[in-house]
Length: 225
Image (cartoon, helix red, strand yellow):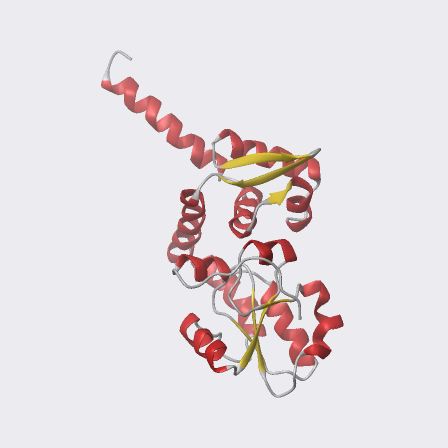
């Protein structure tokens, strides 16, 4: 390159590749899902309510920007985040939007205030409840996300299986549900169903990714009720 201007232009062009890759609501949602666990294309499509063709196209854009990587298992393709820096990018985007856009707080408040009969549980509070045995902690994310990483002592109860397994919870003990993060709707929905069944139900204020980022203990593998 002949001059500093050309160097700058070339660098900013590369920076813009990353910005362009995340300039889509659906691609941001895919990153959010991949912050939980590696997923197949069809699994990502189901979770994001997309067609497999559309999910593949969006994932291609993320891959071109080197934000995700792939591996093959037979005929299936699995995607994962390229590194922890990509998850940090997602969290940074989310936090900047929350801090600078009033619409984020308004949308979240309108939804979550309707479901929060009690104050959400913080991380320290949840740790104390786990250690004292005063609460049952349930992970209502899909099983593959739980297996990839979860809060120690939490039981995997995917939201779709909650009704068929609710009879296994002892009466008189609070149930704390958590899912993918502060804007995930799985835990609030679980709270509603649990309260309708007569349980004291609360949700973790944030979710598993925030728990992990805080350096708190993490378990992997499966565990049934």
